[in-house]
Image 1 (tube, rainbow, N blue to C red):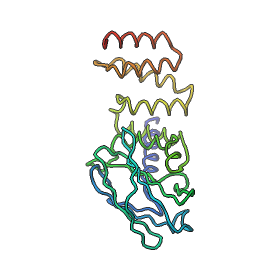
Image 2: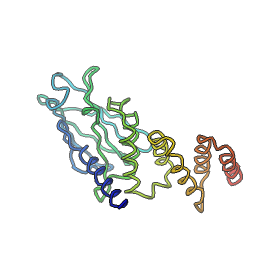
Image 3: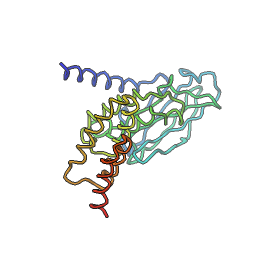
Image 4: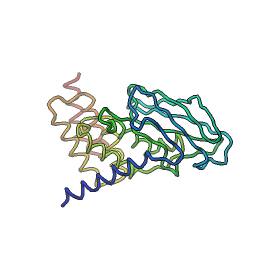
Length: 239
C-alpha cells in the first residue's frame, strides 16, 4: 500500500512539473530544449500582468551546477509580443525567464517561468532538479520575483532522486537536498540525513570532499565526536 501511495505521489509531482511549462504568455520551442541547441521564445505581454506596460525587458537565465548566466537577448517586438532566441550552453540544465517593466515584474503568479533542459530521451537532465529547487529556495525571488516555497523545492528534489538514484552520491545535489529537507522537516530530517551520511561513509572510495561533507553535517547536528572522527580519517587518507 505504501508503495502504491508513493507511486501516486510521484505521478502527481511529475504532472505538476509538466504543468509548470505550459504558460499563458510564454511559448518556447522546441518542446524539449537540449544543451548546445538554440531555443526560440514568444512572450505575449497582453496575456500577463504586464499587459498595461508599453515596453518589457527580458532576461533569460541559463542555470547550471556552476551557477547561472544572465542573457539579454535581442528582441523583435510586434504589438504586445516579444520574440527572441538563445543558445544553451553545454552545461545548462534549467532555463528561467525574467520579465519586467521598470520596477514591476511578471513572475507568473509567483511560480516563475521555468523550463527543464532535456536529455536525448526527452527527460529532464539530472541537474535540473537541483537548479529548480534552488530557484524555489529563494534564488528565484532574488532574480525575478517568484515566490519562495521550500516545500515545492523538496518535492522537486525528491522527484529528481526518484528519477536519478545515482544522485545519492552527488555532493552538489545532496547539499541542496539536505539543506531543504532540514528546513522543511526540521527534527524529522536528522535521522534521514544521518542514514545517507552513513551510506556515503561506507562507499569503497570516499573522496576528500565527501569526508568534509560528512563532518560538516555531523557538526551541524552537534555530534562533535563523530564529526571529529571523520575529520581525522580525512586528514589521514588525504594528508
